[in-house]
Image (cartoon, rainbow, N blue to C red; front, top):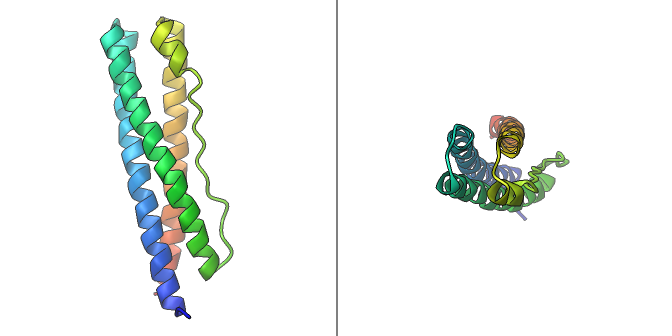
Length: 138
């Protein structure tokens, strides 16, 4: 049976893996937002494709972050009651943005990107808070 210290260390490591994925997702979302501004200012198909690629990168990182969060929650159960930590990102406008390129759709996509960045930032803060609490127990 593992000691409480070992369980805490495993939970901290899981938190760090989660934070890594969230940070990379945040970077992709920031870049997508920047490309979105260019797109709104008259970018074109190439700009939309680059922005879409950045969104796809963010979605991939968020998917890995969800898996890492599940592992983090499992590790937390070994230490204490797990908090409900989740990340939700909807990107149902992605298809419309690429094929029905226009200012309104671009503005809606920018709104989605901003909302996703806020959700990631909130998840990062929550994971950091729990991780810091765990580290204080070491």
